[in-house]
Length: 325
Ligand code: PEP
Ligand code: MG
Image 1 (cartoon, rainbow, N blue to C red):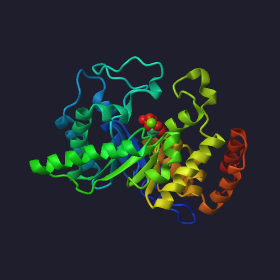
Image 2 (cartoon, protein in one colour; image 1 turned 60 degrees about the vertical axis):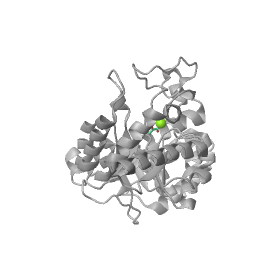
Image 3 (cartoon, rainbow, N blue to C red; image 1 turned 180 degrees about the horizontal axis):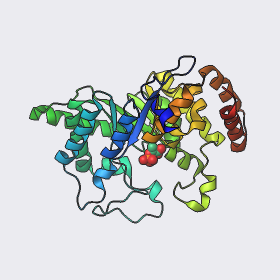
């Protein structure tokens, strides 16, 4: 099987009727980059930077971060690299960074909320990313966005960092693209407004499912309620992708659903631009993609939208997976 998959490493990810996808990798370490490159990745659709901050005793300095971002950017050789700014809090804690005790950490002080509060910490990371952008095709992505104000505040700090670097004579990509994760229901519902502010969306289905269904993604007692194929989630995906399309911006998916073979017809039908997944999923996803038609996916998706239960949705998706090619 592995041998068989190896043969499609350099095959274009395109359906039988010509819809092409960008299949990218989610990475959170340099080691994962090797696997991704070996799978013929289009680029890195999600670089989780938390690992730089974890398992240590103090915040990483600008220089340290810059070295890591730069080496990833260089190894990707002009392939896109989306660096997500710090997404701690919730389930991800830092020993040296005192986060308040909270009764609802997932709804609490985390991610972009911390970055907009501790602006020096945020600026250090933004400067490191900007400096690395001089050496590759680097883009910035903000997590857990819930409002236009947050995007503007983050972009204002980014602008300050650019001015500083200019004054210091340090190179960076002047037109670096900025995007946001769509992972909160609020962001989905104002996706048309948010689309005016950014260059791209990336849908974080892990959190989007959690927050749409109010099901803690870490709580095993209710894991049976964590249902990516819930009719409400499908509607969230549809709203987001359609808003991006209408605004003419790039839209990707970077949660676990992006690498789920079952979900492929959904992305095809909605015409997403990019799927970013664990590097191991790239070739299996491509293998199935090569057997599908966008046109078939569209009619299947129309049926999915009429389903009233997740069970029905699963049934239809499974049937399409078993259908002979
Ligand atoms: C997501 O929420 O879907 C996502 C990709 O980010 P993380 O899993 O790091 O929260
Ligand atoms: Mg998330």
